[in-house]
Length: 241
Image 1 (cartoon, helix red, strand yellow):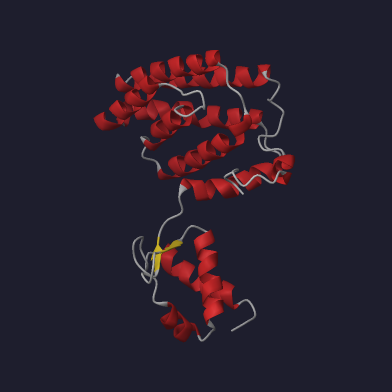
Image 2 (cartoon, one colour):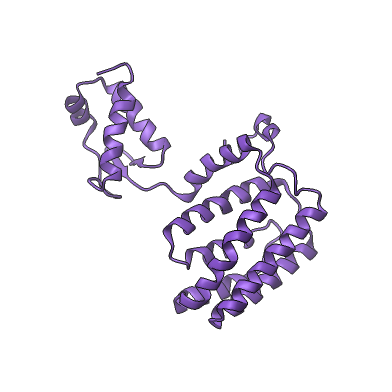
């Protein structure tokens, strides 16, 4: 096997996972079996497994239970997205423009097709409001998007929400802004609960328009979501590190 043996082994196992030959919850063969199968050292196998774990495709079990197959969580996708947003210089204005292209239509779809349980969950989240630390805001948007049932939309926007949550960690939101956003969430939720597609779409559009005005008034519209200098700070609490 070549000098890139860990990459070759990781590639073989990755194909088995992505092809469905190995499913979430399944276990990889024991380490000794992988060593014999690929004819490599224990360290080479372990390096390959670390590559898969970094991609969110596997997770080590406690003790001698081996390595379990799993699917990457939105947080895993978001970490890569955060790096890309940094390198491309994506701005807060770019973010709002992107969301305005997608979320109103998705919200209208949810108003028409969501299950009763999903409608009630969205209503409950809206009623809980937005805490001083901002929690409640992203959770509401994630619930709405998840109710669309569209795997691509859910994956992309869930990752976007995680990236925004991290990028906004140092932003300060005033009591007025929180209350205004919470009222807007309640109006969106009511339209969804009523099954009014056009109203739900319009309410989400108005909500994002208000967010855009806030960003512009704050002078952040042309500012990068994640300035490169954020990476120079030795702060292990920042979740994308």
